[in-house]
Image 1 (cartoon, rainbow, N blue to C red):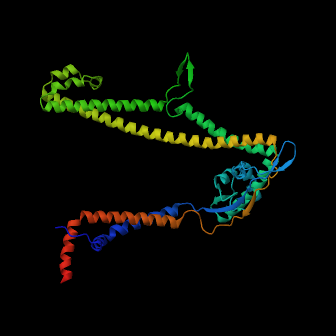
Image 2: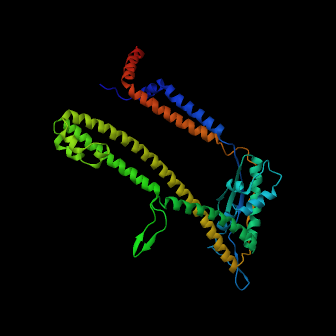
Image 3: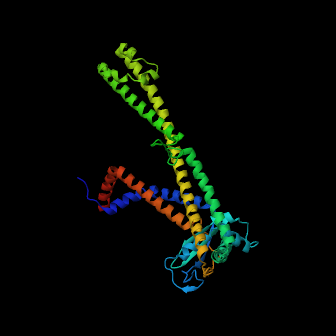
Length: 404
């Protein structure tokens, strides 16, 4: 008769497997420590900016009207300008000789993140190996941004042309990558070339080579799988003396591919037929294994290409949006001037951080300890479940001893 469940008794059983709980947690902590040691140390400093909506709008009659344009998101206009070549160059020139090592504009752009905050505020964060460098660069970008904004919105066409040229150059680079990818692999790894029309009939470009190979490999695998199933059925029928009922299914081009003739098979004795079909089965299975391995490799290659395609499209789309935004702004600059071009201001200075932002030791160790304890507890529960009978017997013997 089963004993009633007692939670304290179950905890005692789990305690007997304390090593299964402690060891995974210790291993996870060691892995987290190793990972944290190998992670490069980076410090993040952030400067807070404010970009309120403009209230003064320049009109065609050369008068300034006190109007609040609620449709105009000034912060959204200003934030993308932080990560431009112009702003990075201005920032680096202002702190030249003060940094612990040299930075180029592209490296600074890659290390910078801009995030919106409450209301009209946003933050400029810079990640660097040295906390002093991180604070200097964040404050330098915050000081350079109003200068870039003033150049753009106070009517400096030269500064605008430089910024637009930088963005256009980046877009052209990714656009060329997208064109090259389409030419080689097609838009969706399906067809390459452009869609054309000839006499009312739509014609596509050449099918992508990798797509062709994938289709061919898949067809070969399916063909050999069907053929292998037929051989297996004939072998089973031969063992029961009914080979004639299924032997006709082997009359396919695959049989000739392996050097066999259907008429010759019909003349074989059951024993010889069985031996021949077993040999054929081994050959087909071997070829099928090779084809499956090739198909798996090809599918992995296709997955990598699709990931590459998504990355190219996403990055190209970002630069395309930037190009369009600057083009729209150029049109806007031709019909009006924004009087409040220098309203963007820094409201909080970036200070050298005391602790690095990476590696995050506390987070890494906490996650590792949690995962290790959960994994160890799971192993202990499994061990209690698998050794349940022996442990219940042990508990049953211990209980009378305790009562005595």
